[in-house]
Structures are given as C-alpha cells and as structure tokens.
Image 1: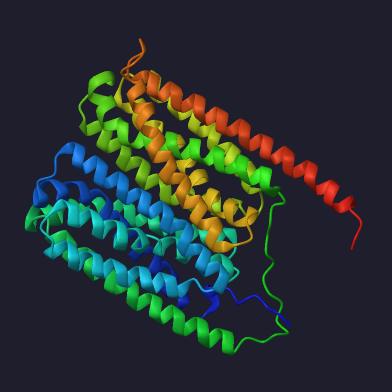
Image 2: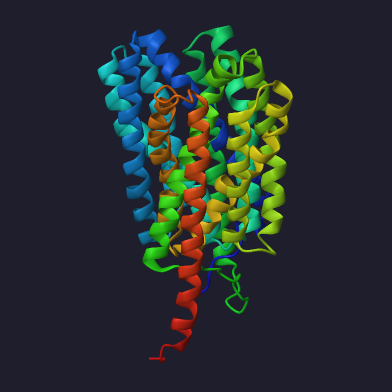
Length: 405
C-alpha cells in the first residue's frame, strides 16, 4: 500500500527546522542578489553594460536549473538531497568568487555553479508539498522568507560598508553552512519518520485543481504579467518618487520598507484564508488590490498617500508571492515542476519589467505611464485568471460525466 509521507512539521524538531531553513535560504538570496552588481563593479571593474549582460546570463542559468533540477527531484521523489546539493554549491560559489580575478571567469562560475545553487528554496517548498503540508503552512513558510528579505538587504549593505565587498561572501558562506546543517537534520528526521510511519494512518488530503493543460498555460501567462508589474513597481519607485512625484527619494525607501513590513502579516492572513476560500478567488482579490495600487501611485502627489497605498501593495504581493505558489502546486501534481515553474514566472516577469520602465520615457504621460501600464497588465492578468477559473469549472462536470474505465 502506497502512502504519502507525513507532514514535515510533525517530525521531531522540524517545527523549528522548517522555519529555520526558510529563514536561511531567504537570507542567502537576500544577501547575494543585491550584492552581485556591486561586487562586479568594485572587485572586477565591470561596466554597467557588462553587469547587465552577466546578470542576464546568470538568470538564464537559474531559469534552466529551475527546470532541470526539479525534474530530477520529481523522478526520484527526493527534494532534500537537491536542496543539500544547492547548499554545497553555494559554499563552492563563494569560495571560487573569493579567488577569481576576471569577469569572464566569474561569469562561467555563476553559470555552472550559481544557477543550480539557487534552486534550494524551490526544493524546500517542493518538499513541503510532497510531504503533505497544507497551503496555509506553505504560505506561512513563505512569510518567513519575506522576513529574511526585510532584514537581508540592509544587513548586506552594512557588511559591505563596514568590511568591504568581499566580506559579504563570508556572510553568504556562513549562511550556506547553516543551510547544509539544517538540510542534513531534515534528511535524518525525514528518514526516521518514514521508517516509523504507520501504513494504516491516512495521508493528508492532496488538493488539486482540475485546470488541465490550457488552464495551466493561462495561469502561467497571467503570473508572468503579475510578476512583471510587481518587479517593475518595486525597482522603479526609487526613480519615480523624486523625478515625477517631486518629493525626496527617502520616501521611496520608506514606502518600500513599509510594504516589506506589511508583507509578513499579509501573507499570514492570506495563508489562513486558504483554508476557507479558493486560491483563484484570493488571487483575484490581490489583482484588484494591485490595480488600485498602481492607479493610486500614478496619481499620487505627496508622501502620505504613497505610504497608505502600501497596504494594497502588500496584499497584492501576498496573493502573487504566497497563494500563487500554492496555486501552482495544486494545479500541477509534480511538486518540483510546479514550484520551479512558479519561480520562473518571476524571472520572466523581471525581464518584461525592462520594457515597462522604458515606457515611462516614451509617452506624453511620462513616468506615470509605467504605473498605468502596470495597472492595465494586472487587469489583463485578472481576466486571464478568470478565464482559467471558468475553464476549470467547465472541466469538472465533463470529467464527472465521463464513463468510468
């Protein structure tokens, strides 16, 4: 008799290991991502164009790794060993970056080592799904990653400012060691739980959404648009606030800080709501919040409304960043593929954010056009998700009416 492994949060110590692992993986990304461009510039003398090309090549490597590694994990139903490998590769990455001296070698290292090293967080969420964690538990874990993103970039900036760019490599290496240790403990606890598992104990219910291939394509396309608008607003706000709104750039930092601080409670609230409402319905509310937010930012003329609007921004992100992850895991039965595909919508969306920012200087509306475009694309994403929901509703009666074999 085949059984689903028990929820990892029921393993001994794993109620501490799972959030600890999420925090460490979040810190690793929050340390590395904002620091790469600065390291390229200060340590290797890279120009702005060279930085752009290296980051683009690195992201392509991460995109491929987010498909290849999860495919292996799905075939072997093992998500912890790839997570352990990601931690080891991160440690190798920082060691090599500390000794190489030329930008071409750095690029090769990032492609060969950095891409696979970045899939660890995906494997954590895939493991939770495979082990039977509920959507609310997964969203709670995602909230811990947001905590890391609140603290990580300021900490990285302080480390670089006090000790120099190479010091951040040491910090990332220490975090990688913590990831390796927590993953090894999770593997040991997972094996112990499997060996002691009682076959007569019912496995947790595995929620699935019957969207079919068309529905999956629709939702994926919608999330690429939603991720693009989210990435655009976050990266462009520091330029938009002083140049168009006409207030000090510090208010952009305050707004982003408020949004980051509100993300955590928003994720925890929306995680609880997944127990009562459908994922698609919750994402619809996030899309509506996003539309109002982008239109509000396009019309804002002072700091106070800008700060107040961050409540809507946080709710929009909670749907895209939290419920979106569980939605992909529900509509695609393979945990590795579903999580990797979701993570890649963020990468593709980040690429699309470039043209959206360019739009701010190409129309008579100026930079406000970028946020009007974000509102429009969010509306398009909302309509696509609505179409996917209708497709799911139409599939359900057809499948229930199909003759049994």
